Amino acid sequence: MASNLLTNKQQTPYVVKHYLIRMIVFIAGLYLLAFGVSIIIKANLGTATWDVLHIGLSQNFGLSIGRWVQIVGVLMVMITSVLEKKWVQIGSVLNIIFVGFFLNQILAADIIPTAPTLLLRVIMLLLGVVIMGVGSGMYVASQIGAGPRDGMTLYISKRFKLSVGTSRTILESVALTSGWLLGGPVAIGTFVTVPLIGPIMQRSLGVWTKLLVKVA
Image 1 (cartoon, rainbow, N blue to C red):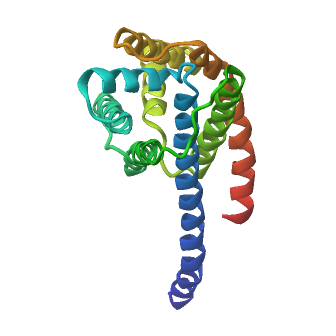
Image 2: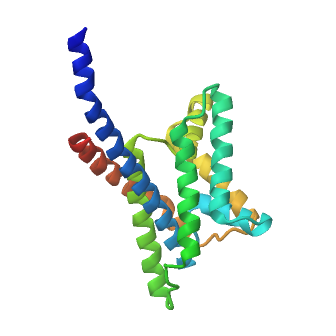
Image 3: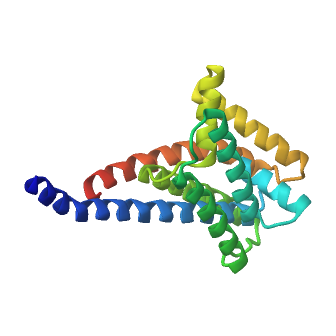
């Protein structure tokens, strides 16, 4: 019994360190995700699918883009929770809150310049996509909290016996159509983000997963 208590005490610092490292990666990943989204918005060549919806909602109903990120995300998490009859995971809620907060802060600070030429806007768009993909891979690798769309995608896949890829495409299409009807910015950048973010995120996920295995 005493030996078990000693072992538990010895393991406690490791567990705390393990969690702190993953939390730092989680928050840093969400910040990079929000920073990438901000760069894409400032490039003004169209935004990622869900940001078309968030911007459309902001333009029509007020509130900031980041606030709509939070509202839509919380609604999706709650709907998924009800459908699956499971408790809402705190990590998923933190995910939504941080992304919306960071996005608002970055846009309000106006630290991203407006590009004067089309070439620079294209470069900004591609840079934003890369940063967004890297950040997404980081927060997923941390395993602290999944994004709101991840849970809904898996539910649709199980409920209707569809592949995860098909389920995600359906979800993205609904968001894009809704955002477009609301006047959200659909342009070339919207269609560039779809095929590029996935592979970049996958690469980032692999790198950060291996790093976290070593250090956390």
